[in-house]
Length: 194
Image 1 (cartoon, rainbow, N blue to C red):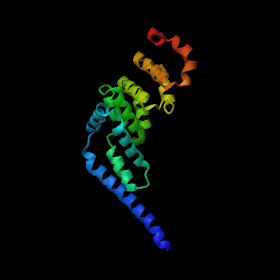
Image 2 (image 1 turned 180 degrees about the vertical axis):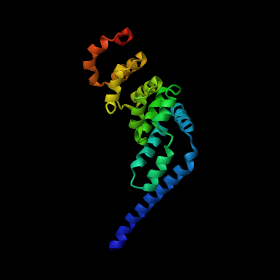
Image 3 (image 1 turned 120 degrees about the vertical axis):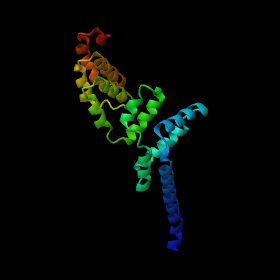
Image 4 (image 1 turned 90 degrees about the horizontal axis):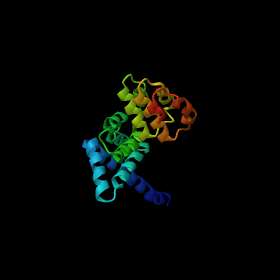
């Protein structure tokens, strides 16, 4: 009697595991979908049926990254391998803001080196990299985690970088900006005060 009552539960577990394995195999075989193709599918979804269906499905695949099934986690990880902060930074100037936000949401979930990469960009000798990192931080919403390297850029020799730091801090509603306002208003460049 005990075995018979356990049979439906075992069958359900087998079906769930088979479904996970099947989903993992589908992801593994469909890995040929490039970042650009996936974003194009998201754009098409936005225009065709009010949007968000594909984004919701992507969020479901993101949830598989924390799934107990190793096969499913690995397949999802491979599926999102192009979603890195570096790839986000490369596309910030060419993609619409909506797509950058969608990519940023995915990057926050899948790029385990995101904060390290951003910190490297923030401390780079190249002003272009520092500016790109600040722009990415606005999309990623990780100002608090990178507060010190960001605040260090308030002393940057390049005016564009200092202005971008203020923009980044103001977008994040970081209250650490409030005590800095008197200091910023005395900046030798009047663009900062504006």
